[in-house]
Structure formats: structure tokens, C-alpha cells
Image (cartoon, rainbow, N blue to C red; front, side, top):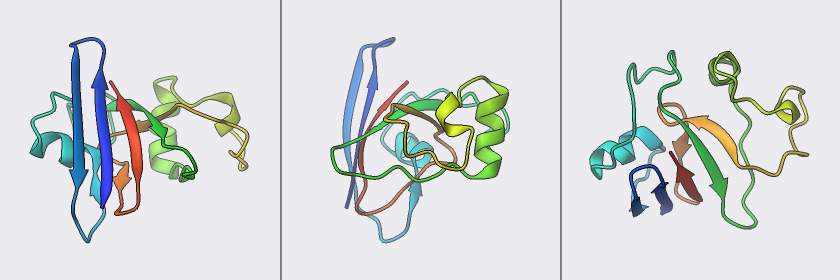
Length: 114
């Protein structure tokens, strides 16, 4: 079961959520189901409003950004220089992801700041 902790210093919130699902679920879906006030406009990855910083817990591996998500994050200035190339192993995080595109799987454990 995946575990996600949403943290928002701007609004003073901290939500720890355990996701029990056999299918991958987006961060945005989890946030909506658990009433986490994550900002969102299009929910399709076009606008970048739902960009969040993601830090994986120790020992977990970052998944590569898909080309669509990378293009949107680059357009809003959130793709770090280390992610520009094919080999993104040098970057230690936090990483920017789009909550509507970032899928949580059963073994994932990470912190999300917005």
C-alpha cells in the first residue's frame, strides 16, 4: 500500500495518507479524495498549476518523467538542470512533478510539498 504525506507550509497543513489500491492512482486523485486543498486548474497536465515537490523516502527510486510531463514542467521552469539529459540519476531531489500525472503505486512512500 502506498503512503503519501502532503505538506503545505503556505497554509499550515499536514496530511498523512495511506493509499490502498491495486491500481496506480494519481496524487491529484488522492488529494481530492482526502480533501487536501491542492491547487489545480486543468487536471490534464497542460497548465502546471498542480506542480508539487516530491521527496521519496529513503531507498526509493525516482521514476523518470514522461515526455508530456517534462515538457509542461520545463515550460513553467520546474525541471532541474540534472533532469535535462537522459540520465537523471545525479539529481537527489526534491523533484517537481505534476500531481495529475504522478502516479502512486502500492510500494511508493513519499512526501509532497505544495
